[in-house]
Length: 236
Length: 242
Ligand SMILES: Nc1ncnc2c1ncn2[C@@H]1O[C@H](COP(=O)(O)OP(=O)(O)OP(=O)(O)O)[C@@H](O)[C@H]1O
Ligand SMILES: [Mg+2]
Image (cartoon, rainbow over all chains, first blue to last red; front, side):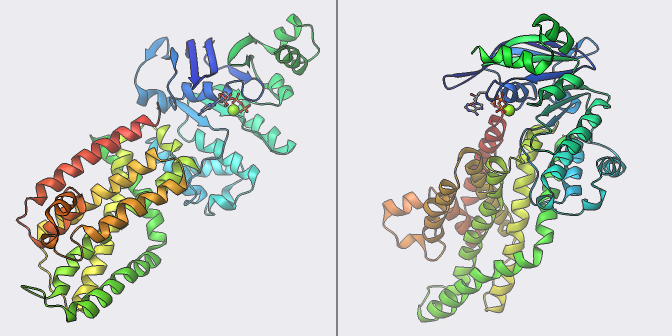
């Protein structure tokens, strides 16, 4: 176990975005957070990545069964790929990556950045302003930025939104081969099915299913995960 | 402490990269307003008024320096507002294992640098226009404190305000009135007591006072203002993750 969520809840004004979530995330697994728009996926990730405080409930990070309590330590072990692009618009591609590296106290970051740029075929645009990249290039950049400091846990919030099938496949290949615990959200259910060890389905902030795609298909007697998802989320 | 300094430098360096790229444009644009003030008020108006105990331009230059460093420091921070609300690039700092205060410190340091560059430009122009100013260490300290105060006010605005319109209103309702009232263009002693009292509550007034008189009590007032605004800025940044 690497993260444990205990009655995690977030309420905005009078909207319950995340409702009493209990969940244990295993070290090394790929966990998919699925749910329709507004189900509470992003809010859950924002709480787990210390960007916003839970209204009630708690969560714990572990390093070999020892609980981690310092904010700095948690932030050094996680990488976050947000749902939206959040680059520094005044900097080039490389400067954006260098800023991230320095903020994470990474040593010898130049080689690391070269390696990552090459990995996603962005080495030629390293000195361009980020504004000049295409949507797909920006998404790839967003992902490698989160990898610079070798995070143990990677949060990916819809990393393939609005991308063509080629780029999507490439990104999932990349994610699959990472040596990290991965928590991702996506609306491409068939992709989650082939990629995730387990999926958690959220509906109105509540956890309504949690299991491997195989088991979910068996339990709900459906031929694929998308049918399971549609069945579970259409009741509400 | 070591991490605080390193992180502060990282944040500062980001601003320096951006400023360096536009340095010539920055310097040229910073010359426009002071030249207008010096010509209009220094040459134009200044020669036609009899200013007790010296030339008007010598009185005017510290005022211009005070109001200029206020504007530069404040406007150096306003992009943080867009970084928080629109580009959301502030998330990178919130998600980084840095000392949160170092973000505030780095941004304010960059504001001080911008303010010092533009102050140097004004001093050179003023010298060309014939003003003779005593450059004491207190003079420099006054400008730095003034920059901290208004960079901090800019930072607080960037953290608390959610729209561009309201951000622009800070300029109109706070900075612009201070530019004209805080003893920048005239002696406050000529004002009615209650007006002078109100104006002496404002930090820019004390910067003007201190620039003209190194022994002024205004030094203590500016230090208090700086500390208070820094503490509020640190808090505002930490509050972003509530
Ligand atoms: N800052 C906020 N203030 C008020 N309400 C919010 C805020 N952020 C999210 N919400 C609300 O909380 C609920 C959950 O939002 P969240 O962004 O977590 O959903 P999501 O599952 O990520 O959806 P999507 O698939 O559209 O990204 C929604 O009803 C949303 O309107
Ligand atoms: Mg979302």
